[in-house]
Image (cartoon, rainbow, N blue to C red; front, side, top):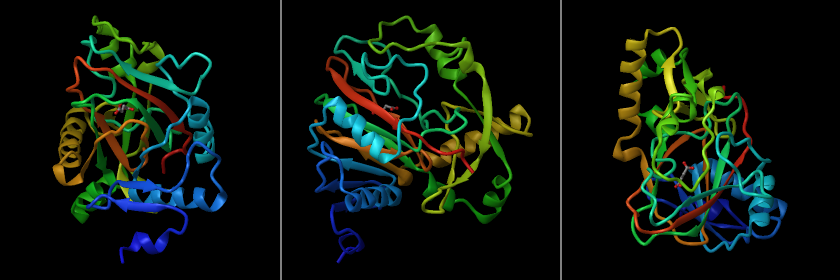
Amino acid sequence: MPMDAVMYRTIEVTPQPSGFGAEISGPDLTQPLPAPVLEEVKAAWARHGVVAFPGQAMSLDALEAFTLQMGGFGSDPYIKPMSGHPNVLELRREPDEKATNFGAGWHSDWSFQHAPPAATILHSKVVPPVGGDTLFVDACCAYEALSPAMQQMLAPLRAIHSARQSYGSKGVFSKETEKRTMQIIVSEEADAALTHPLVRTHPVTGRKALYVSPVYTVGIEDLTAEEAKAMLGFLFAHLTQAQFIYRHKWREQMLLMWDNRCTMHFAEGGYDGHLRLMHRTTVSGEVPA
Ligand code: SIN
């Protein structure tokens, strides 16, 4: 009997073949979850990093209520939220949009914040017939695959994170000319930077994960720019190897929740001519350690 069948009493968990990512059936996320169900959902999320709940016809109110049950709202900067729902972002790309789809670069959400979100929750309303998958990297497995010597070398390092490459005064969005439905807020505030441990320890599982991404990591403290570029280049190539990636295929009315503390993700395009519509919230997190 698979281990998950033994572990869970209130939900059914079907892990992806690698164990990274799982589908969960049983709970009705449109209703408040009883404590034992919530506990098992949180346990499965910690264990598998990315959990998908198919067939959840969530209203915005239900999405907000589920987010609160998971730990409370994170703070989402640089994107105008939905009217009347300050904690919900609408990820909407119209069929005629030519601007690059939102999230099309490897990142862990808002890692430039002092206490980045533990989770991101994405609910699919309209899924295009082609493209639009979301890819995830298992940053724990990627860390564990490094040699002990490399792990030791990385242990004391702090990576520099900033939103500047995307939302800063000279960032990608500041130069955008194509029409975009989502309202992005370019800001000088986004030019700021802070540091986090390059290897962070997951507060629930105790596993270590590489905590860097091409979108938000702009250097490594105490290394020269050249040294940091070489080291980050190696780490980005290492992280994005096929064996660490789970490709998520969407179905409509599916809720996906991922753990930003041990994953990076990438929103794939390939659906020009089709609408893609998602609602997104974040769950507040702790200071990485
Ligand atoms: C994101 O949150 O980065 C976007 C993910 C997606 O739209 O698939």
